[in-house]
Structures are given as structure tokens and as C-alpha cells.
Length: 319
Image 1: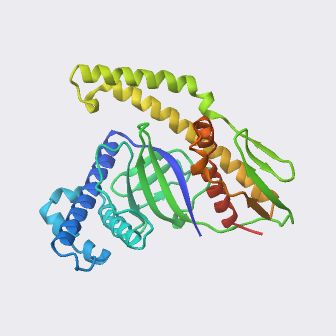
Image 2: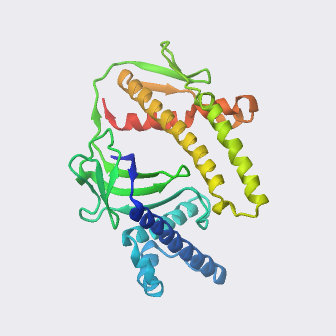
């Protein structure tokens, strides 16, 4: 089976420039291909949708027309076209919406690259990872020891907090666990994140309350600096004080997300070890979110994340 592992990276200035250049080039190829497909459909709606192979065959010609496309990882450029093709396939099957043009103003950017030989690999102590075109980059070592031959692809991400992450797709063996013979039902709640039918309680963290003062402080400063920039006729992209406050707000949200994710991984792992069968109640969260008094608390519980991580944990084990 496949497993996604995320870790933080610390690129130097030259590597950061190349990462953002790759964001721009992969975004450009996506937008150019999408514009071409849109124009093709408008000219003749009866034409069959071009396959990935047909689209990828256009890349060499585009590189002749735009030589600067050769400056970045060629596999990342191909992957951008493949992602567009896959998005169209999902759209025609009714699984997703029609593809949209990508914007450089988006504070979240990413690109995908797949393994070619040993172009993606860790060093011996796993404190550095080699990525295509970027070379060796310092990274925060994962709790997992990742064997290089198991790596299939890497997604390089830039977050609104100004941090860089990689998400590795790796093959993994199912972990063997002893059978317990235990069956349990789980209720998801607000005061407690989860309560099992045998009385076990997993407390809610209420992180939105823990970080409320910090968020309020920086959100207030961000709003004030936004107004000041508009008053001075400065574009928000160029307003350094506003951008600083915006990054601080994003960092707090990222910290909350990381803490919540870590907590959910720990309690779901504990559940999978303790029970062979877990039955979850089916909650209509969309309707519950309409109650504005509960909406913030419900959003803070991350029920969907809990269900997703629990399901993944069960799939990765053998009992």
C-alpha cells in the first residue's frame, strides 16, 4: 500500500528561488494547456478530449517556444500536465469540478515530481534529502525511517506561514498487530472529541481557545495594516508590515493544525491497537455547522480528519 509522509524542509536562498520558479513554470504550463483545451472545445465541442499522452507530446514544442521552461525540473513540468489530464478525467466521471486556472497570488503553492532513478533520496541520517534540480536540502527528520527505494514521488509545498514542506508518497508494508477480540462504538462530540461505548474518553483540545489571544492580536494588527496600506496607496503584495502580520496569523493556524493532526494520529493509533472493530456514528456535520453557536467548536474538533486518519490506520494494519 501507499503512505504519505510530510516533513518540513529548510531550503537556502538559491533553492527557495528555484522552488518558486518551479511553482511559476508548472503553473504556466497548466494554464497554457487549459487555455488551449478551452479554445479547442469552443471551436468544436464534438472533438474528443485529448489524452495525457497527446498533451505531453506538446511539451517539447512549448519548450522550444519558451526556452526558460528548461530551467526547472522537467519531470515537474510533465506532472503538471498529468495532473491537468487527471482532473479532466475526474470531471467527466462526475468526481470533481471543471479545472480552474492557477493564480500566482495564491498563498499556497505546490508542485509534484516523481522518482527517476535515485533523483529523490535521503542521506544516511535522514537530515538531508536530495530533490531534482534543487540538490541536497536540510529537512526535519521524520519519525519514520524512510527507505529510499520506497519513495515514489515528492510534492514540494509552500504555505501561507512562509514555510516549506515536502510530502513523500512511499510504499509501505502493513503493520502486523495482535488481535484483541474487542469491538467498540465511538461517539464524536464537542466537549470530548471521542467517547467509546466502554467508557474511554478522548478529550477535546480546544486549541481555538488556547490561541485565541494570539490570533486576535495579530488579526487586529493585520486589519489595521491593511487599511494603512490602502490609505497610502500601497499594493498589499508590497506592504511589508501587512505581509508580516499575515504570515504570523498563518503560522498560528499552522501550529494549531500540526498539534491537532499529531493528537489525532496518536489517539487513532491507540484505538487501532485496542480494538479489532470500531463503529463510528454518521454525523451530518454540514447541518450542524449551521448552528453558529456550535460551528467554531465543531470545526475545531476535525471530525472528518479523525475519520480519515482512523480509516487509514486500519488499512495499514493486519490483524
